[in-house]
Length: 461
Image 1 (tube, rainbow, N blue to C red):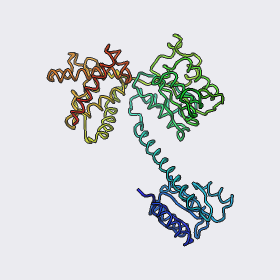
Image 2: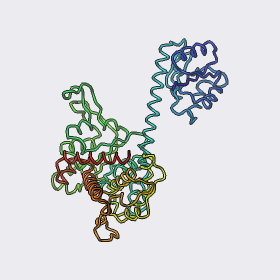
Image 3: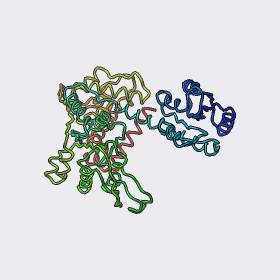
Image 4: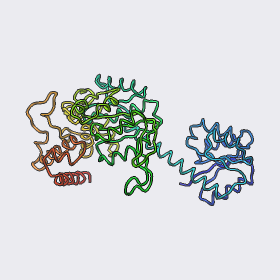
């Protein structure tokens, strides 16, 4: 789409010159002759950029800039100021009021086009970032649930968010530790700055060190330029260290220095980098036991363990299962473009009777799979593929699997899908670990997963 540029100038010759130049460059133009008309055109035309003369009738250019800053329609609207007076004072005043750039008359046409292109590119990036933030905020919009167990943790998290103290999130895998970390950041005074998520178990020690601290040019083969690490990128904001219990001892020592002194060196560098960050860490391991076993530094544990929040497993918040299931159903049915899907009464009963060893993550996966495989708008319990004998609430006790009434091959396929899904959930998605749990070769497990996905795609097709 062609960008629309509002030209605000009371000099007819300058307006004509700008219109000709901008149209030749592929832009659409709108004109305003005074400051008041400029504000009206912004509301009516929603331009992508404004070229604004400072010396205008009715309202000066500075007054227009001030009012644009208060208009919702002008959010991320870049304004390039033009003036024949070119004084430092005028430039400073315009930039203070929010101008993107400052040009003096007579205008250099080529330079003007370069500045316009850069301003539009910057605005496009800002809007893209807003969209991404909105998407992330929507996915992590709220902590669903009203049980007493989760309410207590939410209240403690909200109090913790008001300070800059470090927070240690404990709990089984899949209980929502990242969601709580994002919520704490969102409730804090640092919410306008970045939240950087770092998974401490997803990378090797060398790669994780580079991810955290960055490197200098020439630090190792292939390091042809300086690279800023995520700790540096999070300056002013929050760092979420997920699976902190799996970090190696050497990296723990380096992280301890960051927590103590708020400074570090990039890999291969000698220059001290200072950062102002808040650290939230999470683990499903017993760190006190890890300290006794020599697997985790005691001094780092005490640095992290300022405010500790333990998230309850889903089996201890049974009243939240149905609201969570409905939340995931709404999300996945929307993603799959299948609006109006619902869980049958029998399916809801099966969900509430299940013990959820994989916690909220398992519930999310179960609903996602059911949305894809359900042949109708109503999801029945057999599509959930839950094991009744693992339920801790009201099992019928006969140990029967929900898909035993299916034909032989369909029953075997359903049971295989369930076993593999459970193993992947226990392994946090790692096929290598899941293969170890199942005592299978990793390559064989990968073939089974590929075969299952092919069948599911065939069902969708």
